[in-house]
Image (cartoon, rainbow, N blue to C red; front, side, top):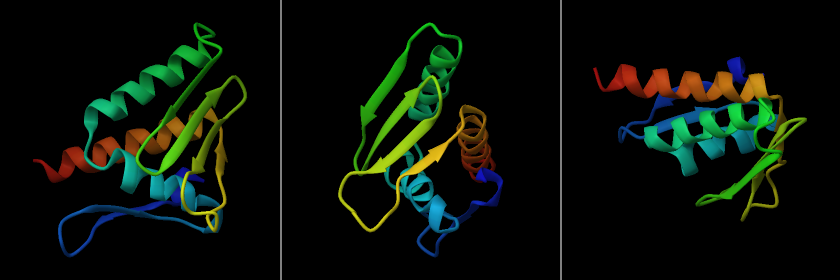
Length: 111
């Protein structure tokens, strides 16, 4: 699923993500909450590892436009302000994959 999310820069130079209807919350989360914040990306990767390694039972945070819940079973990305967007529910591996892709995408642009 995360491999199907298209990553690109718009005409103003902002990083963008687009996916299918069940990936809208995930794509919006990348654009609105993470943006170019590599420190936040690293923190989310760290927190996901903490949960999967059972060092923490759960991680929850609110961003600019989404709430993220990382629990033992999955990662939930829930839009805070747009009831028309379906929350994304993805596996830890899928979440790590898309965060890693976004980080690589940002790093390529800065080279």
